[in-house]
Amino acid sequence: MNKDTLKDLKVGIISSRFNTPVVSELLNFCVKKLESQGVSLNNIVHKEVPGALEIPLLANAFALSKGFDVLIGIGAVIRGETYHFEVVSDQSAQGVMRVQLDHNIPVINAIITTNSSEEAYARTKIKGEEAALNAIEMAALIKSL
Image 1 (cartoon, rainbow, N blue to C red):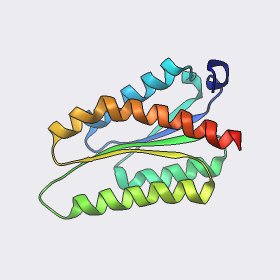
Image 2: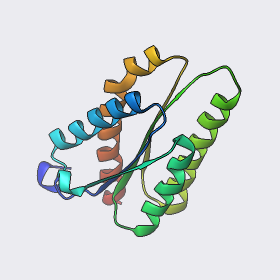
Image 3: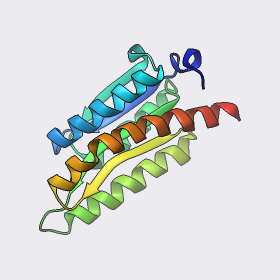
Image 4: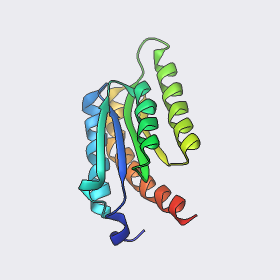
């Protein structure tokens, strides 16, 4: 996609409020990269949900609206002392995958899963920017079909 085409790209972003400091950094890097690539801020719709498990539900609603070219789910699941980490990690990823396959719209999974906050912060820039670039690439591929 060239810069002229990118300015019209419609991006839906769903982020979780759980682990807000990490998620805020991921979101910031993602949006900055989208903008630097030519995506208009006016074409980015961002909504928050309580946690990573709620991201697929809102992504599904976004997909049903038919108003987006690509969706991005942004969250952070940091390992704790219980099995809950595995459940949230697995089910949020499965939910994101289901939305993209059910609706034939790219849904970029930027829900990081780490063992510690330190690991999470070390990944925010890379994963946020990667999510933006992957969103642009996947939207272009789908549009080219």
